[in-house]
Length: 164
Image (tube, rainbow, N blue to C red):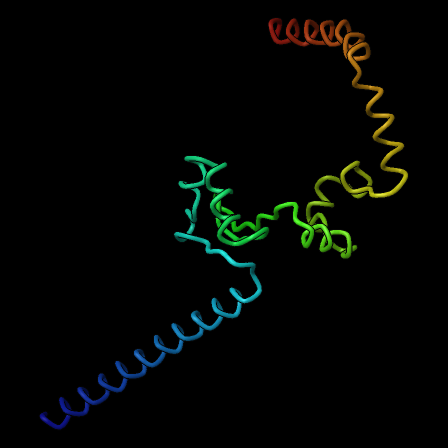
């Protein structure tokens, strides 16, 4: 019986050591991945998990941005409003970055949501043509001309709700 207790104790010690080694390995892996990911981000910090620096930002956005830009220059990373973000000030280096990269812009999933041919997605003479046409539809005179139709549609639908 004493032999079986000693064997059981040794087995539980081995299991504990294996669990501790596994936990340490996992902690090292997580730390390594965070370190590697942090190298790809601009300077700054994400703050508290999930909440980030949202409280500071919401209290006074102007002071928050002024302080961060003074600390880190024209570009910094942070976590505001539950989202990891990168702030870019209109510096010469950032302008050079934007004008040198053709692939910067909307993520692919956003293009699917908004539509490939929608105004924000188009970046050539077609953009100017569509913007001009849309601009004509939203002048003060045009908006006033829409009112009678909108009022009649509203009255029609309100009447259908009343009778339903």
